[in-house]
Every structure is written in structure tokens, then in C-alpha cells.
Image 1 (cartoon, protein in one colour):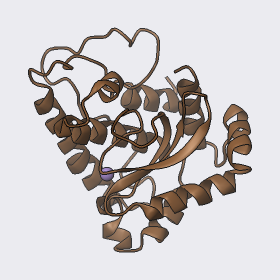
Image 2: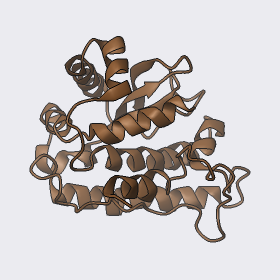
Image 3: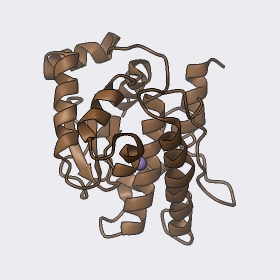
Image 4: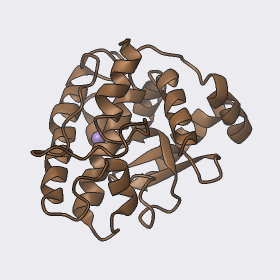
Length: 236
Ligand code: MN
């Protein structure tokens, strides 16, 4: 298994979000339904863009907290045993425990992958064509994503997603909401790229300078993985 496959199998699939054949009907085993995915790289691997201490606390404390609380929320829940992606699509908007923690688990599972060191530095292949069609250029996409991330008031995420007509769009969501949550987010879709703009994602290194964090983060996006997420999203 090469490193890229490892990342896919270790986090996105572990999060139950992949559309890979054979995963669709997999029931959750007894015991905790979801677990913290491995990063697949060292906490310091994204230095100097993102610092090791932030990565470690973000992954081992914050993300672990979402996983623990998601498993608690699913005890005896009608959606227990479903894939995470199906849980997000089916949950009730008033079910805040699932919105917060199902979203928290899904959002971070994607986030670690698209920040993996290495990979292409620019969109390539089909994704490059789609980005060109939707935004004019990769730079324009990055600018618009950065603007969406800057506009998030308080805690939330900025997203690149695919809508039901297979068109890419940028949006932002509050707290741990995810674009898969119909009835929760303003515009739903399948997320391809998500940017965490909670202060816990950057405060240790960048304090209040969210713009500096975003500029730094744009430099470590792994466009190979993002292209793979786009291909998965196209399959629905
Ligand atoms: Mn976070």
C-alpha cells in the first residue's frame, strides 16, 4: 500500500465517509462505533506552515473529543450503526449532539487528509478543469476560499463542495456543521476541501491573525488528495 492509499484507508474510510465499494453495507462492530483516525504523518510534518503543538492538540484532544462524544450520542440512537456520511445526511437539525460531534469527526477526518505533506501543489486533471470552469483559475479559487474563511464569524469552516448538478461551489458553515447536512446548512453538497477556522486550529501560532494562518495553510494543501475527494464526490 503506498502512502496515499494509506492515508485514504486510514482516515476518510475510517471515518465511514468513503464511497468505496464494499464499505456501503458495513455495519459498525460492537464497541465504540467510531475511532480517531491516524494522521498518517508526524505532528511536525507541516512545519513551518502549521506547528506541531497545534497539530497534536487539535488531533489528539479536539478531534478525539468529537469522536468520544459522537459515540456517546449514538448509544441507543436510531442512526447508530450507519456510515458517518449517511448519519450526516439523515440527522435532524435539532439533534445538536450529532450535528456537533458527527460534523466534528467528519470535518477533521477530511481536514487531516487534505493537509497531508507531499502531493501536487496545484489542482490537476479533472479537478483542474472543474476549477477552471467554476472559478477561472486555482488562484481565484484560493482567493474566494480565503474570503469565505475570513468571513466566518466565530467558529466554523470554509468549504469547496460539489452540488447535486456536479458544480463546484464555495460556502461556509457554523461550528461543526458539514455541507452533507441537508436542512442544517444553507447550501448542501459533498465536501471536497474543508478549512477549519476555529481558533483552536491556529491560535497557538497565529493568535488573532486568521489571515496569516489561512495564507500559511494554502501552502500545504495536498491537491492530489483533494483531486481524489473530487473524484469520489462525482460518484455521489
Ligand atoms: Mn478543529
